[in-house]
Length: 211
Length: 153
Image 1: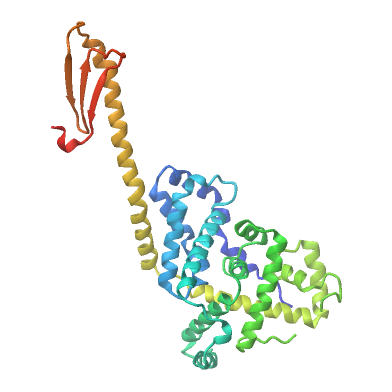
Image 2: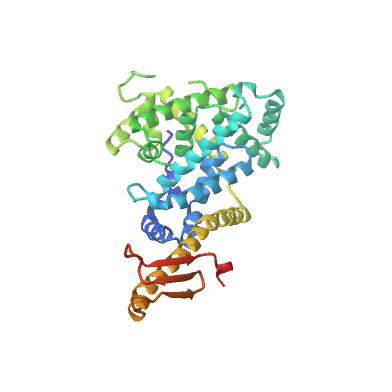
């Protein structure tokens, strides 16, 4: 019988670091770059995961991560500690990501999952067949790319909750706080996002959709 | 699957999967799941999606060099604006302090007679000042401040 994925809670050292965060934030608010650097080192990995799940290009991801932290530092005075630092930071990163995507959308027309090319389909089949072999790295890379594509087929709202829950391992209430919606809306969006992803991944034969 | 039993909806199973049910509801649900192939299938599907999302998450790990390079760019950007702002602030504060010193300390020591016109000139690092006494008919002391350091001397 499947059980809830408890490993995710291990991925949240920031909760234990709340007091340490506060000290660093106070110092950073006073202009200390070294304190802000420690905050960066503490959270860059999570922000990168959040951003990187939505962009194919590592360069774009790095740019957005940088922009998000720059924005965070410049807005530190507006952080009053009402929410936790990481939810505040996530919100900034999400907004930065949304802005970037909007600009990017004007430049390029994003591809729909329905347009997955024949070549990509063949690559996937090849990669899947090598699961236990020496090509495992390639397989995982291909899967990651396809998952990103699948995610990008969702609306921004559904994509965000999915990433915040599945990659950043945040609770419903934390997601609600970051996205500015109710917990009920978070649940409903997650439900829809999973359903839609299962449909897409089933269509690509990555996932069995029966049942 | 929905409405088969009131608690065994996809939404409740989603909450269960995400660890968002309280202890009592979780236990109750766990007792019912084995009897529902649909519920088991749904949870398996959630698990597969989580695993794929996990692969996506892992694929984005940055190496040490990227982390450091990103910080260098952030630091460079942070130094630009506040640094300039700080320098300007220091400049104007020094200027204001110098003006206050001139008015409140020099003034009592340099009283002049009624018909005498005194021109005092003070140069400092940031600016030069020129003070004309006595006061004008409207009761003001005239002070020139030249803040262009390069031409101050």
